[in-house]
Length: 147
Image (cartoon, rainbow, N blue to C red; front, side, top):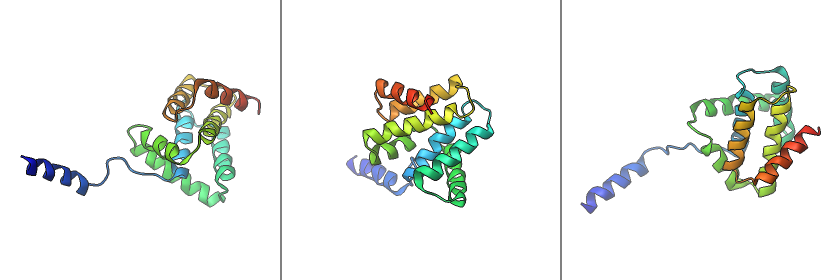
């Protein structure tokens, strides 16, 4: 019996990981894209804000931003939840950096001049996955509206 259990676990080790590991840039970009897609309307203001955010936050060229957006969009399309993205962020970012990421999500949500309830829902879920306290969630939202 132990031999069968051992074979079962070794079979799992030989299979590719169910959760695909992403680099930090792809994880953050995917969550930003998810906020942009949340209201089912892709606005030019949101796309411009996304591009500028990625360019500034990661110090990328226009070509690199385009490649990152395509890669992150594909990863997002293949994902079944946000965990694979939030895990990378939690593993690599401090609490302050995670709050900053939530603020970036809020800025993108407000880019078209209105906040859709679906956008807020996505940001709230991501905030919980990133272990951002509710007071920091609200502070990030307020900071994003002041810009």
